Structure formats: structure tokens, C-alpha cells
Image 1: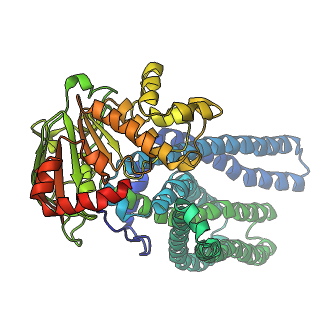
Image 2: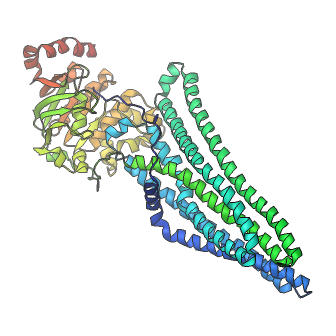
Length: 597
């Protein structure tokens, strides 16, 4: 088997997107929910209006107190404004929170659907833990930036401008004092924002590294334990967690400085206005009611300023997440699968499919050496064809190319005389049953694993395939039969049982082309013999291609393709190849016989 070597791509920092691309991506997530966001923004603005009326009512209250007039109506009106404003803000907050969750849901659905359609070459270049982090933690940041940040910015701007207008109408001198303080401290906040952005980006990368390291350890959990490597792996993951902590603390530090600057700006403005305003009241330039209203507006100014700072902070955090999400969205995917072909599309009644390789060349990546050097052979259907050869000859790669997990770099592959690139991908794969070398079993029940490739299979079909794959004893032994959970990666069943489950899953698909990659390597002699008989029976109506290292399997094949160093060196029957091909003769005398010993 020849497989590409993976490289860790999450070591390099994620390139930051230009502002225009960031806004375009943000709008793409925001656009489907703009109606609800607009409604939430409307309520937020309405809450802003009610809040702006409160200082005016307070000024009227102070002036009526000075004139000994009735204040009952003002008290009732002011109370109504406070209650109404609170209710409106609560309703607007709920609408915004619901819209934000909808944005996250849509982003996750889209990203999950795209990642599951990635080309195998892209998946082998990218750490799965890093991709999982983009679906989970990165999309979470969209919650704030695509809804709350937009509304916070809009209401903050409206509130800020409206408050400044009201302050200007009251007293231009005090407005100048307030504006001067805000400009100075606002400039300092502007210098802090890029630091928040940088720290947030590094924090997201560190969180992704935690997922990557954990996925690595969990993926080889038994090996970790057998090697006594728990402490070492713990230290590796802990280092990634510490880096995330450091970057999180750095983000918190700069955000704290930004928020403290806002508070400082309002407090300094308040003290300056109180001192200068008191002098203007003493000189008769303004009334005490105007000063009180001005100070109330000044306190209210903290809310829109806070919203603007919050929006800027959320944008800096969200833009780092957007860059990672966009990078994932740019990974190369397979063609859209369209409507999956129903189970049984490749019914045995339709006959076995023919397979032809015409001068096929292939390499996994440009920087890697070629795996296939002009591979050519022809397999008529039905019947059994075995592929043999030393490790690294390119046997398993043949199956990957037929399934179009990879695209050839030269030559072509025909199935039923038709170039596989002309087949709709769903239709091609619906005609193929594939049993991988490690026979993966998914977390879930035994039944779910059996019908994974044929979800519409009937109970009768399931019983038939359970019998053919010699799984009756397993089903009887499990406490809930077919509905028993098999554990993570099939940890509750043996390796041989996992292989039989994988074979049953492929048979239940009723393919026209069955690919078996060392599918009986973990079976005992009795079960291997039984399944060999099943495969022989299936091969009468289905084309079976098998990579095998056991002589007992190879001798049953109608034809044998001998591969070496990415080339086909001979094709024939067992007897023909023993007499004509030295490599096959050597394999038959050593490797095959040893495997059956």
C-alpha cells in the first residue's frame, strides 16, 4: 500500500483577509438573516429613543421643582419611559440572540457539508482537529460579529450622534469639552484594536492546536497506553492549552484596557463638565436644569460609546475566525454529490462491471515521487481479479483511483468502457462496494454500520447479509443484537468481526464492482474459508478486485495482476505466473505461503 505522508499545516499562522474580503464574507453569513436582524435593530433603536427622552424628562422635573409646580405627571412619564425602554431592549435582545444562533447554525451546516465533500488529498494535508475547531469554536465567534456587532455599531452610531446633537443644543462650550476628551481617549482605543485582533487570531490557532493534538492521541489511544506515553501526550496537549491561555490572557488584557479607556473618557468628561458647567451656572449662562440634563446625557453617552467599542472588539475577534472559516471554504471539494443513487443501483442482476486502466500515471502531490508509472490492465466482468506485489507497488492506489478518491495525473480509467471522469460521482460510487484495509467501523449500533451504505435496506436483506458474512454468532452474543452499540471505531468487537462487518456492509450495497483491500487479513482460518466461499459465489455475478497476500485467496482468482514499483509486470493465472514471472514465483513461495502458515 502506498499512501501520502501528511504534513502539519496548522503550524503556520492563518493569513489575515483584506478588510473588503472580510466584510464580504461577513455579509454572506448575515444576508439570509437580515430581516430578523433589522427587526432587532429597530427595537434597539426604539430603546435608544426612549433612553434619550429620559434626560429631557429629568430636566423638566428639576425645573418644575424650582417653580413649585406639580411633578406627578413627570414622575409617571419618566417611570413609563424606563419600563418601556427596558421591555423594548429585552425584546430586541431576544430577537438578536435568536438571529445570532441561526447564523451560527447555518455557518456550521454549510461548513460541515463542505468539509465532508473535501477531496481526500485536501484531508490528508490538513489536521482533522484543526478542521473540527473551525466548525466549533470559529463559527461560535460569528454569533457576535454578524449580528450583535452590526446592531451595536448601528445603534451606537445613532445613539452617539443623537446624544451629541442634544448636547450641542444644550451648550456648545460643554460639548467642546466633552468631545475633546473623547477624541483623545478614542485615539488610544484605536491603537489598541489591532493588538486585540492579533491576540485573538493567535488564540484561535492555539485552540485549534488543542483539538489537533487531542485528535492525534485519541486516534491511537491503545498505542498511547501500550507505549506508556500518557504523560508525554498530556504534556503535548497541555503546552497547546497553555499557549491558548497565554493568548486568551493577552486578548483579555487589551480588551480590559479598551473598556477602561471608555470608562475613563466618561469620568474625565463628567468631571470637566461638572467643573466648567458649575461655573457657567454660577455666571447665569445655563440653568441648573440644563446642567443636570447635560450630565445625564453624558452618562447616557457611555452606552453608545460602549456599543461602538464592543462592535470594534467583536469585529477584531470575528475577523480572525472569518479568515479561518474562509480558508476552510477554499479547500478543494469533490463535485456536488447530487441525489444519492438508491441502494441496489448496482444490482448483481445488472452484471459485473468491466475495469480498464490505460497507461495510468499518478502521484499524490507534486513534491512526492510518482506512485504509478503507466499502469495498464483490463478486467472483464464478472469474475475475481487479484492484485499482488511487494509493499509500495501501488496496489491499494488502484482502488483509490477507481473510487475517484484521487484523480489520475495521466492516462485514463474506464468502467464499463466509460471514462470514470464522465460518470456522475454518486452514480459511480453507488456501483462500487469498497472494503478498506483497516475495515473501519463507525460509532453507533451494529445495524447502523451494516446499512451505512444502503440506508433503505430491508430486514430480510440485513438477515441475508449477516448470514453470508458469518455474523450470526456476533449478533446472538451482543446484548441488544443488531441494535447494540459497537463503541468508538468498533472498540466493542474484535478486529476480525470488524472486517466481517465491513464486508457485510459492502455486500448489502449490492454493487456491480466489489473492491476488497486485504479484507480477510484478520480472520481465522474457519471464517476466512467461509468468506472466501462467499466472495467466490459473489464473483459469479459481480466483478471482484482483491488485494491479497494469502495464497489461498490468490489461487481462486480468474486472473492475477502482478505489480512492482508502480508498474504492471505480468497478468495471468496462478499456474501461468509461477512458470513465467520470477517475482510472482518468489512471492508465491515465500510471502503467500508464510501468510497462510
